[in-house]
Image (cartoon, rainbow, N blue to C red; front, side, top):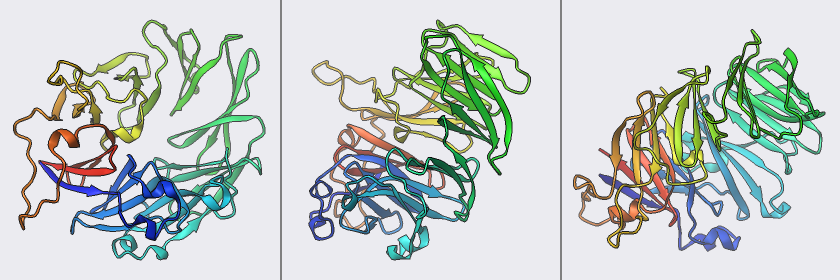
Length: 401
């Protein structure tokens, strides 16, 4: 069923926001849910919280009239929601983080939250990255030329890393990989302990001269390096064993997701998903999981905590009445180990229905095909066994069996 429909748009938005674009209907770009509350972030920067107990909007999380919320992070360590925002007052140039306990959001006491990392100047190209796997936060202050690591449990500062010649930092369970500016023939790399920042290994990885680096990724002791028009290299940094996978077999993906529980990784390329192991072997290709969106955004994909299922907004088999490709997608749930599609929400499924209202008044104005059209964000609430989708109209739909 579609159980519920929520709208992030508010006719009265002009009463509490002053930026013109915050008052307009806007597509949902991110959905996060925790403890019976759904948080829906619109592309405009307006973020609404809805209760699944009362099925009413609790509040908008924008505390100031010129606040534009860019992203959300649910911190399970202390049961709070972190918002990352920019403000018109400084020309949207500096990221500001704020944490609010879920319990206070439920009571609409948003002023009980408090700002985080106030000592850091997170002006572009500075950033903040939340690392759920290790329980850490990585910040980068471009103007100070420094990376800092904080504890995600209590936001205490742990250590800093000077950015001298650091091109990028990759985080993996227990470790951080520092990728330095390359020379023509090699790239210097350093592995640090994530807990205290102490160096564990410093080494150089040889490169093909004149070929750009497509990606460097770190997963536990495995280093993945791919250069333009070259084979994928998988290096074991402990044993120095090197495996190469031919370019015909492994082409550069647009995104990766590492499956830490299974020691595997997902790749996304041209709307297709595949599962690989660290011997460079294809483990799974999916039989019915052609992604709707060309650019792989993880906000349209959900992987369960046990990393056994992937849920995505996919291309539907159904064609429109005139024979052209349908503008309506489906939500497909597939088994990561077998590639089989085990469940699907599709508009042509006669078993799908809209849940009746208890008091008879409709709260769901969309039809099922409308709810499956142009889905822009997706989230699966594992505790409630519900899927939440957001669309280009700024609507959120609740799907449950």
